[in-house]
Image (cartoon, rainbow, N blue to C red):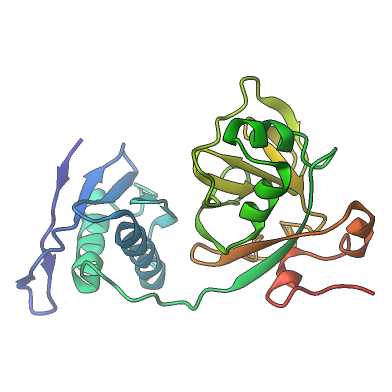
Length: 260
């Protein structure tokens, strides 16, 4: 794998100082990986997502997917339409332009997400409470007591991977993953949290479930949220479930939309 810190060409053909906090490496015959180095977790995440936004804005011919994560960016391209060197030069130029601490380009939104905790909706709540030495009520209070930032979109179908709640220690994954997890399931593992956007297998402990639709398959994009937005989970009672079933997550920007 070819990995280096690129110097970015200026408009006059000279080279500006490279961003020493970004390395760029080939990844197979039709992708590159830009990875942050020498930064703490939060500035690394901010730089990766600013670089993704910058590359989207450039609309480079041949690039068909840009996938930012916590500290790295995967850029996939059509190798019949462009090549590693072209994409690498653009990445290096944008990284140099942004510098190590770019300002956010899009104001974050806040989603207030209703959740029924425990019981059939969150069957792993008692076990998670026991593992952490807390009561079920304390788990719910911690999970719903602060805004959790969406860090990246994962599988399946753009699942919102967020910061985990301030539990005293990481939450283990299930010893035996489930073959099916219902859409809207609210889960935790390690120091992360997620909402399952569609039915799928899963090995994360389930604390609850939201009645609102996470995906809108008729919209582009199909997710209302993006990295940098925040979720605030709001406990509701099982008898309130039907009050929210015709809402999508897009309806739940702060303040939460309610019926009745």
